Image (tube, rainbow, N blue to C red):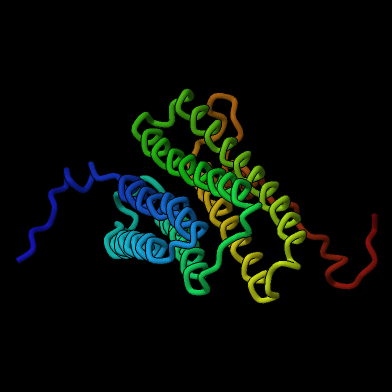
Length: 265
């Protein structure tokens, strides 16, 4: 017979702890992109297959954590943040692992590597993508600390600076991707048309991994209370209060207009 957790255990368990564990599992997938492409660029497809297998294994671990979150996340009573927001953040984080698995699978399936002259730029691109993913995980960890400190001003500033860094890294990733596309175009004559198409797809998919952290860091910002430390806040502060909440009365409609009679004003 299963024993229900004590009330103190329920209250002390933060949903952000599970969220952080899932983020770290997704990041572990992204970290394998460099060793995978090192093997692929060297033409060592046996080693590349082992790296791809490890990526798939880690992606499976991230999926297990995601399903665990969906099954066991409390429904409202003891939640410090919105359940819907947490589930959406898990979904976005999970896309990082999925995209990484897809990139390695596409490359391995066609034994597809980038032209040798692009290697340095490709690895620089991947490094930027990984930096964005690591910073996004830092944001999730900082958000957990933020809830522990009752949204203190110093912690809010720290998490805001990390969010700005994620945005900068995503822009840097976009710029690298644009430059790589131009370089790849110069080598199209040396590639088969099909390989060229899939190489462009690889660049796009790697860039998407950097785009996921950008969406990840948007959600924690929505939990920051209004006007803390002079910083802008999330969606909640942008909502305009309804007349019912503010106590202001609605202006009555002009009955003469609604009834089709000419107004006397």
